Amino acid sequence: MMMIQVRCKIPQLCDSNGAIVVTTGNGEGYKTDFIMSPRGFSRLGHNPNASAELIKYGTVDVEYKRVSCTFNGYNIKFQIQESSSNPGYFSIVVLYVGGTYDINAIEMWQRENQWQPLHRNYGAVFDYSNPPRGDIHLRFKLSGFKSAWFSVPSNWKAGDTYSTSILPN
Image 1 (cartoon, one colour):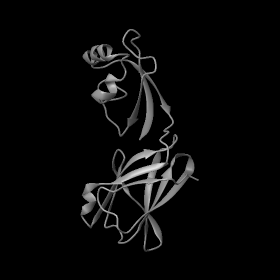
Image 2 (cartoon, one colour):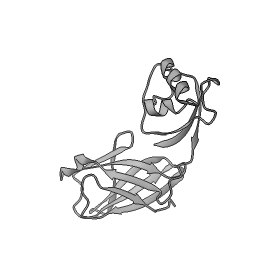
Image 3 (tube, rainbow, N blue to C red):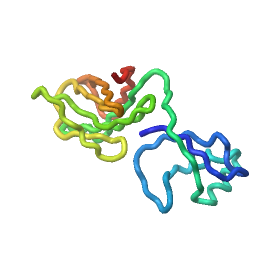
Image 4 (tube, helix red, strand yellow):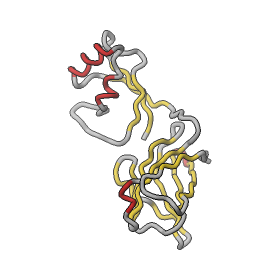
């Protein structure tokens, strides 16, 4: 998951600042780099009428660049998925990672004194079968050989969201 500034290349319709969008996974389409939501796509236009015209095109040429995530107050934000209400399953979706870091892996500390990788299910969703009881200790392995640790308290429940103030080191 990362933030991207996308600008379309039709000067009479496109806003020169483009739109900042959050990528959530991969998608493929015919001759496309991004499959954008209608809301994100409509933000490419410099006004509502221009946005309506752009939508008629369906596919437009764009330029894009990665931009830093700058949500104040936390560096990593994730939510425990509803499917985690099953006691034999633990799943999280990463909602936000500060700066220009990418999550390469997430690991869970096991009672056997070792880190075990969570499975990257799709996009920003990571899961683990048969998680330990009690606190769940996670290690986020980030791009640039950085790591960040977080302990989910033992009273966690499906749907809980955690905003961390941990800094990658």
